Length: 329
Image (cartoon, rainbow, N blue to C red; front, top):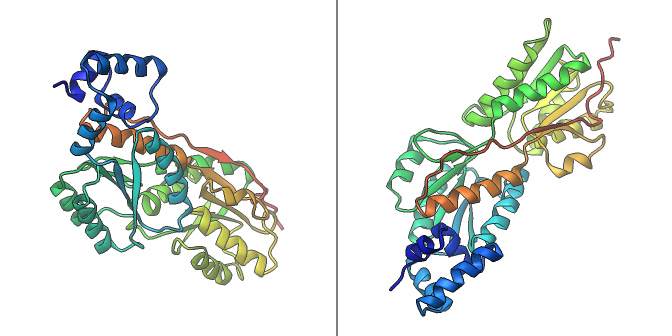
């Protein structure tokens, strides 16, 4: 009896391509015809192959979310789900509400539910995460954090920080306040901040002040309401668009004109940033592309194919109205 591996070899394609064909995922017309001819040649119907495939693996990919209301997570899910459908898989999602114990528990639970693989959208990677991932029999891909001991995928947050800072040098602000998050989050809390520092270091006389808040808009609003009553700078850079929007709301409440009295920029490229007033200057991290790329990586991990190199996810600086030129009064 011919196997999926045998079909793939005879057709000159990968096992994952045969899998997509059997699960009604996207395969080019030429490749589909080639696979179908081989199926007919060996007198097996696609249904028999599908039943054999189903007995060997699940058509679900487990996804562990830190927060269900995170704009970056939602955008990543859009790209991920779209590509997973092409591969003939569906998503089985768990919301852990930033609880590490629940993340560890969810890794075990998803394995027990026999998912094909697990994607963990992480805000931090601890030794418990590493130890747990190494014991699992299903492939795990970590999104949002980087660790050489596991398979991980994230943006180049250090470079994103440099890119934003360099792009804002032209506006002439010298007193900059960076509103970040906990440094337990290495990518957002440490690397993104370090990139901003490196970018502004090119301009002599620049003064950087650092504040810390949570990821929620409400947290940033309360911090901003206190801070903006006596602003320490003319330009506020937020570690995420959510934080930037919280600061903008506080400025509106205090009657401060954004883009004139103070300027605000963020990271993320969330769609809401184009609709707030004034529209938000931000680094677009293309989270949908991250999700699609994660699906491609998971496909290879499931079939134990080598991931030779992962293309870098592009970043773009979106200049909008929330940043204006410094006015020396």
